[in-house]
Length: 110
Image (cartoon, rainbow, N blue to C red; front, side, top):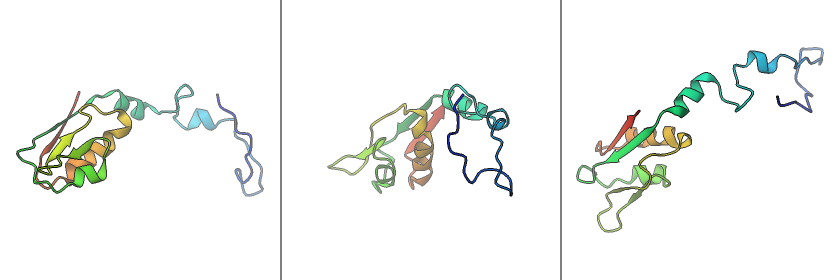
């Protein structure tokens, strides 16, 4: 269990503090810092597919998440860099799919 070394400013209106039950009430696992919902989402596998023929070369995906998407230097169409991104990139992948004006990005979750 992690300990808090400086609790100044935390507590009731009198400035007293009792941090003894923080981890019991927060819903955060002591082993990895993720709650149950976050752990379940992280366990899912997200697969990205792109359709370069449907791509209209707007570049919103590459501009938003350059670690997942790039653009072909000749055509400007989407180039997928990581078809199975780490859970930390899932939200960005979803955003890119939403931003794509041509619907060239498809996401599937297992």
